[in-house]
Amino acid sequence: MKTDKFTKKLIGKFKPSFSPELVIPEWNVSKNSQDDFNNDEYYAPRVDIAIGPFNINRELEQNNLAFDTSMTTYNALIKKLYDISHLGENLEYISFNDFLRTLNHNPRCFIAIEIENTRDAKRSLGDIVNASVMGKIGIVIPIGEDKYRLFIKIKKYFHYLQQVGKLEGSFRNVLIIEGHKLINAFSDDI
Amino acid sequence: MDNYNDLDDDQKNEKYPEEFIEELQEEFQSGNIDEAISRAEEQGIGIDEIIS
Image 1: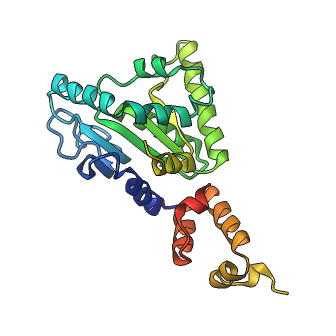
Image 2: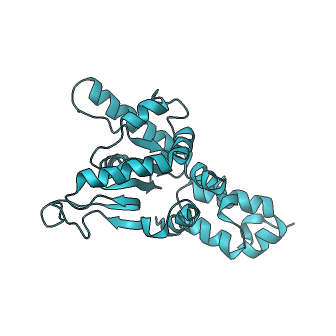
């Protein structure tokens, strides 16, 4: 089932907050790569929506400064995203300050967003992984309450795997936000 | 009396606007989101109304 129209609507909502050149739908994470990441050698996913700045060259230190600037610029927006996410609902017991400490130190973009409208658990698992490793902040958007509950279970699964030593991290930089909450958040003044 | 399910979208929106919005909301929540948005747009209904 397609999500193109929803993606377009969402990007329209982002316009007042982010420069248009920073918001890319269907972003191929290896496109225009100037570092070692290429899709000849590695699997390279497409993120449903990527928001820059981007980190696709070898200037990690400089790019991280750009990410730090974005964190300051968009602090109020990030807090709002946290508040409307599963973390704001206290479903994973991570405070906002602790969440900020879990962010990705080598992301490929500032915010990586994956939209999921199926009940396919393996796809949802991949959504969390891609959003987490590609974005400084990852956002997954389940469409429908049943899909939201599925994502919460998968996050708990990752956390359990980490607790029992089967996984080093548990993708804690990911916010799970229901579609209508995200649309409404960007309809308000942020 | 009309049978709601036998009506087309124009008729549903004209005669039973609340029920029609609910139908689109359900379609959206079920995951058929682009179709729900298209049907809403054709009737001049904003996305904000069908996703809440």
